[in-house]
Image (cartoon, rainbow, N blue to C red; front, side, top):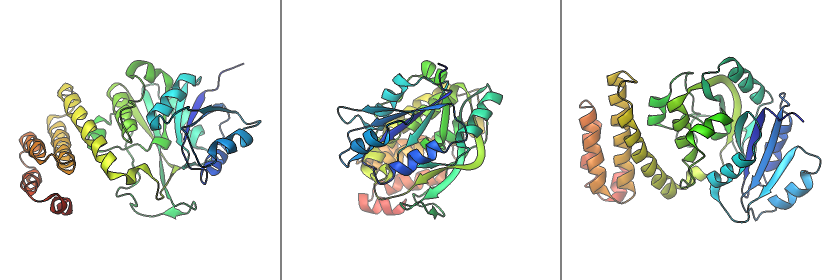
Length: 308
């Protein structure tokens, strides 16, 4: 039997309200050479019983974690089982347009230099209705096709459910880092982008659902993640000179140090936050905002947050 070209890793955790629609949008794909590895991470809302019943006769491989591993532990379980040439991540509360996989596989087939391709998309609410603007504080992430390392130094420009990458990339850069709560995909995308081009399909093919249980609402854990990731990026950036025009690299490095100053301060360490803001200004002497943020770290934490 021929292996499927795409392994879709569906991560599930207490989203029974949204999971049926997610899997319906997977079944509706115009591209049919795919397998689904559906990993439930210890749901307590009936997800497991529903999967056992609904999965009968479906091309799903069901995995029930014995203990809660978190998003990236679950994805790594899926990677161990994936048989496809390509891997797509699909969070259980998101949706795909019918041609999503078709467009991405066609792009990868025509661009062998690309290790990962993502799509444009939009936000939807708990009932599946479009949400305009920036409901989570950012627009739906987009990049150009090419070397996107500097863009990824600034922010996560790739929604997890919008990404499809070559399985061979994992053999070179490693699996997802399970020490992260919500930023492990960002770190993985950056590791891939360091070695391969990143592609972008400029069509709205992925829909990120915004609701009260999104991981991005858990600010304390996100700030801890951000600090860990920003410190890692600062070390990685030391290997980038010569790869990018110096002004562009300095601006990205300065931005990263400034973000690190902010999250260190938010995490209760204003002294090290000030160190990072100084490093930001030293990297780009035109970034006076970093000096203002340095001064703001002497204010009470609640006041500092209002200056952001």
